[in-house]
Amino acid sequence: MILNYLAYGVAAWVFLWGLYGIVTSKNLVHQVVCLAILQTSTYVLLLAIGFKVGGTAPIFADIPVGAPVVDPLVQALMLTDVVVEGTVMALLLSMVVKANEVAGTVDPEELRIMMG
Amino acid sequence: MRLLECVVLLLVAITAPGVVLSRDPKCQVVTLSFYGLVCALMFFIFQAPDVALSQITIGAVMLPLMILLTLTKMRRQNLRRERERKK
Amino acid sequence: MSGRTRTILFLISAAGLAAVFAWGLRNLPPMGDYRGPYGYVLTRVAVYERHATDTVNAINYDYRGFDTLGEEFILFASVLGVLLLFRPGGREDKSKKRVQLEDALPVSDTLRVGMQAMAATMIVFGVYIAVHGQLTPGGGFQGGVILATVPLVVYLSGNVKTFEAIVSNPLTTLAECGGAGGYGIIGLLALLGGAHFLTNFVPLGKTGDVFSSGTIAVISVTVGIEVAGGFLVLMQSYLREIIEERLQEGR
Image 1 (spheres, rainbow over the protein chains, first blue to last red):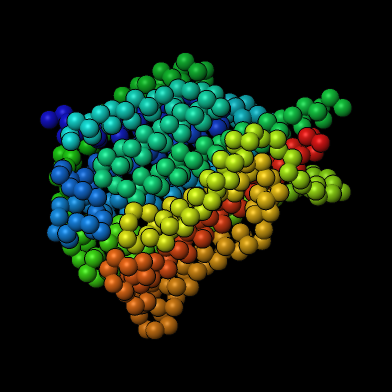
Image 2: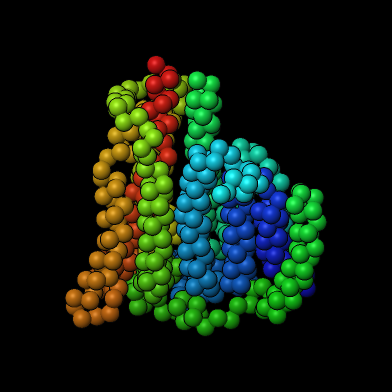
């Protein structure tokens, strides 16, 4: 019974750990990586939703068309998710470099004091 | 096959706190790359090969590479600032 | 607020959030029993309608091609953002001449030979994955990222001059913009014939052939070119100052 819902539990667990990393972080680069961890929890959730026990990959190169396969629409959503994670992290990391150049530090506590 | 999926889900659940608890970004690069590989393994076992390929290339190669480039650039900026302050 | 106060406050809120998660996720169907109708219909119809055996890529580039257009423009916009943030500001010394690059990285022989062999293999592998997107797992995006790491492997083999030549070539910027615009142009070409935007109008070939499934193959190659160019431009904007300084210090 627990095995049915283990995947959803793992998604929530990874989400909470990513959130903990962002809240108690002392380095902007560490915060950006914890944001990436937060995003991987959505992959686990989507993967668990679309899975069918006994199904194979939705590639019909060598299996007949009527065979039981895993849902392909949810996998298309996950592909977009992975791509967007990579690009958003690139932009965020370049902003961290600019923050270091302007303020001289990457500690979020000290950055807040330097405003204004 | 249910056992394999449970084992890989537990592996993901154990590795994620490992990435968060490595506070130094230089250590975090290695753990993030390992976590990307574990996630790709999870996608593979859950019958999603397209997503596994994307995750390997982005999460285990490109993201740690960009973090390393960021750290190098910040270190150069700090060194240049130290040098200018000493003048 | 101090670190300890923040951690305790977070733990209390996390307990509340975990309770909300548990309440929200308990009504989902147990894992392994997804009954969504669209996936069921598409797995039965995609091979016959589009002659493509990879259903996920057929969804990405044809059935939901408009979403992938948005995703490629997200990639384009983020590369643009990084370029804007890293453009040479007024603070840099404009009188500094462009450093003449030589093969100045001392690497061991194993690394040099190994990386050169690996670069050749990776080019072939990246092109294979990008071109066979409609038949096997892979597609334009994955092949493009593999191709984007090839200049890095060349750099690791000690050949800095080739790396700079590849990365600062105006062709990479042209590849990125051409790929992003090409996707939109392929969609617009369908409008010329009177069909909807992004209709599959190229003749579908035989299932299992490389030149099959119409615009899916063309869009896949276009996306691969754009992604490879985009990541190369990204790497160049990070590395531009670092390589010049490093070679100046090493001399």
